[in-house]
Length: 76
Image (cartoon, rainbow, N blue to C red; front, side, top):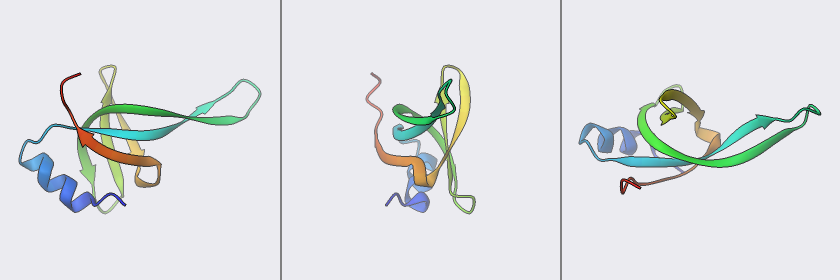
C-alpha cells in the first residue's frame, strides 16, 4: 500500500519520483480497458486519496486504488 503521508513528505523534500498506475481507457465498443502508465509524480491529496501526475504537459489525477507503485525519477 502506498503511504500518502510519506510520499507527501518526500515531495516536500524535493525528491523526484514517478508513479506507475492503471489508467482506464474507454474502447469504441463501450468496454473499459486499463493500461499501465508511468509519469512524474507532482503532488498528493492525502484526505481525498488522490495523486497528481504530469503527462504530456497536462496534470492528471489518479485515485489511490489505481496506483501501483512509486519509483525514483531517474530522468529517463
